[in-house]
Image (cartoon, rainbow, N blue to C red; front, top):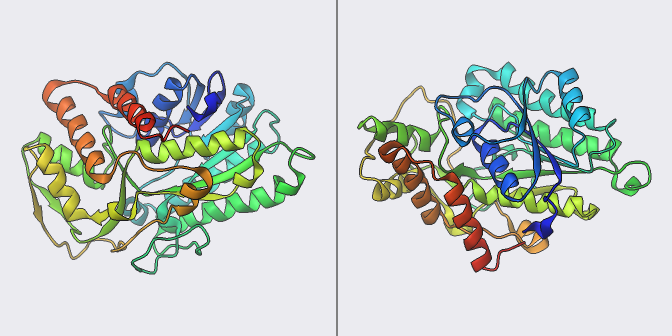
Length: 360
């Protein structure tokens, strides 16, 4: 898979103790990569990273610590970096805007600045968010050419990360000087609302539903008609890895921004997501409650991933229905039988990828 570029390749992953980061690390190890992780302690108990017990080098530190970021990268001397370390929650950004801005913006700047002086780094993939776009509440998906922006601290911080990434690429890693004055390609990736097993993040829909099911309680649904680009966590990770492959293969035309979202028909409402999850696990129950003090969130958010499909050849493997089934299955197995099926689901995903001729 991925033209075998990750086998024995040194990969530096920031945010490896988080939900997406732990799944990415598992994926990379399956591909034969040598992984070094840099992140804070896992954000919850339990957490997916500790459950997996991955055998990798790991540095527990703050992405805002510029000296330690540089030291860790310089010591490991990676070929490629996937930057996922972030404050990832909209609602938390209202409570802690300075924390959100400093982690997301300065953390990314610290990493890019360190890479200016480390010759081993050939490729950098900066992970931002679908919320980086200046949201107009329109019914069609945002494209990479649409303006970035943000009406809340989290979204604004991710928009700034896109601007910082583009500025470093243009100023210090310009494409017209690639393999002349530098050897590093920098790209950014924007995913949809990721779901899957092992997420215990606060103020996230699926973790709230699953924790309520564990406790035999009803979960309060605050915004049932909101439309989001739902996708299983392995979908965008597959896109990040494909993008990283192209960069490692020295294809400089891929050093730009990319969307990795679901198909148009898989942009669906919160209400539909909850009802589908319930169909796969009877313990799930819910009630719709309108909280007047709920922080503002966008009602409609869609991604257009036609660029990734046409230029990268990337396509989703699991539709939303399959993603929700796999997510319910993961939590049901964990809570009812104390079984961890992450590796099993990864292998199922890879098998489906091959069967559907999505092998990159």
